[in-house]
Length: 206
Image (cartoon, rainbow, N blue to C red):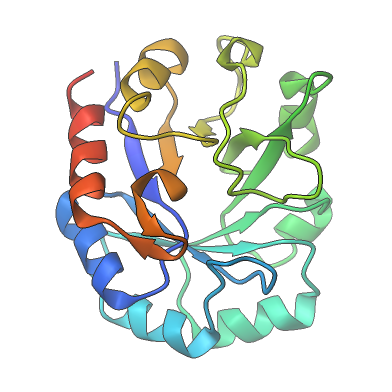
């Protein structure tokens, strides 16, 4: 069984980024969605990306954003991966010639094999909980039994993960990675170093 990686999403400052890196995260998420409480400006994102090691994957998160804005971010911030949280088509996601993750909001009628076919060029699918009116960062867990075994695409598990449930999540789903934001925060946009360390340690003890 592979070791499940950890992505810390909603990083808004360099201090939190450095701590995630030191604690052993494989990636951080930078939210370029203006309606999010974890939104980050291009200049702040640039500062973070320039001051972490190349081993840490920097992921840029977008929600139904226009191509001009995404290109503007890419010109100034050296992102490794894009993450799309809206209704973007595969064509839109692949347009930027960058590896990308497609977020799927898990609903009762979500068919993951269909989503795998639909976004065949995605590096991975990130599974989050469907909540009306929210594009992610719901803080709610969905039914992990909805995830079929042996999907032909790496899975990043999100949605309400925290220190108390991440070990069970990994045992049940065996995802490529887990994605946490609110579960390691003091307040929205500000991470708790102790919770980050504890969360990552839990993933090592599965």
